[in-house]
Amino acid sequence: MGKNRRHKAAAQRARQERARQDGAGSDSRPELGETAGPEEIGSAILAAALEAVGDARAGERLAARVAGNGFTPALEQGVDLAGRQAITTAFEGGWLPADVWQAARRRVGEFAVAYLVDLMAAHVERFALDTVDETWRAQLVDLDATVWWEQSSPHLGQWARSQLLIASEAVTAVVEALALLFQLPRMELIRPLPGRARPARPAHHRVDEKALGRVRGLLAKAESTSFPEEAEALSAKAQELMTKYAIDRVLLEADTVADLPGARRLWLDTPYVDAKALLVDAVARANRCRAVFSAEWGFVTLVGDDPDLDAAELLITSLLVQATRAMIATGDTRNSARTRPFRKSFLIAYATRIGERLTRATADTIAKTPDREHLLPVLASHERRVETALATLFPSTKASRVSVPDAEGWHAGRAAADRAQLNS
Image 1 (cartoon, rainbow, N blue to C red):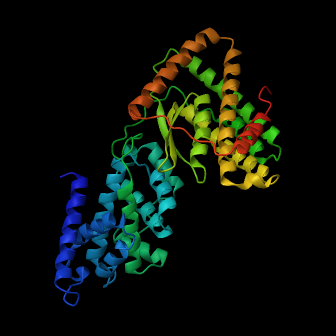
Image 2: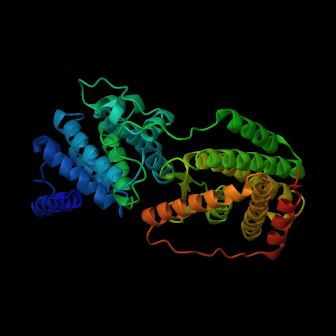
Image 3: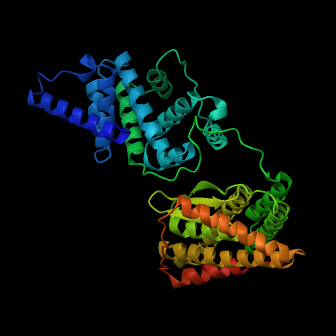
């Protein structure tokens, strides 16, 4: 039986049990925690999590039934069974640890977030280190997701004590966390699952840390200056350096077997997520990558070669900071610039104009390349590989439009992006 069918079956069994108990009257209804074993409690927790998708109080109702006797072995084992099943389903659905954490911090409470971090650490701990993809390992390190608890004892009680929670509060947080996992849609599997990663073959290229160090330095200066013209000129210089580095790399690798393009997800913070996604797309295209926006969850998937993805992500992070600063600075000079329509229009215009200028800076750099006749076919081949990878990962994407609600904000945003001297 598939996992989704098992979830539904567990939910149905729990509903039938509740109906039977309710029919017997409240006085004669037994406490589930007193009689149930781990599997029955685990099924009840999964059912409550499914119910909590549309009813936030479902976790509290279940906790009142199963946690009356505290952290019993049956309760702790049942929670463990339910958690393992739910997180496995989420990971097999394409979600990475950082994605789960990003979704959680936006939609559930701090205790549910903390529980999910531990749940992910426990899941990966079961696999040999050399079978866990490096992206998974890096994301778990960033989240400080480690098996910190004594593994000879169940996790739930130790975790609850670390969070100063009683049993009912802990179960409520668990149900809230698992309810989020059940809401996660299936996504593209962009990295191998734990247990399936193979030893990485030597890459034809590696990230040039010296080159990226220079880019980071320019972008740090751009973020620290209070002069928009200087910030944008520094960003343009960073784009020029990234393009030169990429040109050297693709020419060097022109006669080798190319690596397959990679993919990664970039989460955006509210507000104006759709306008920020435009900026991500503009920077991605200027750096030989492609972007697909998931509006419901607020992230963009970038597809491209790893060095190009690294460079694009650096510039995206910096320009989002700069765009927000320029938008706020405009609001200090005119009251109308503090409204949501103005600010959204500002960011859309900023993204559009920055994209035009970055693309032109890239084209100018390519035009000045001595080996241009050799370079252009190589770049065309690279673009075909990226487009093929994009179509494979996202066979049913569609274009979307973003409306501009405020003309004044649009003109202010373009003016802010136009102040740069991109031919520096």
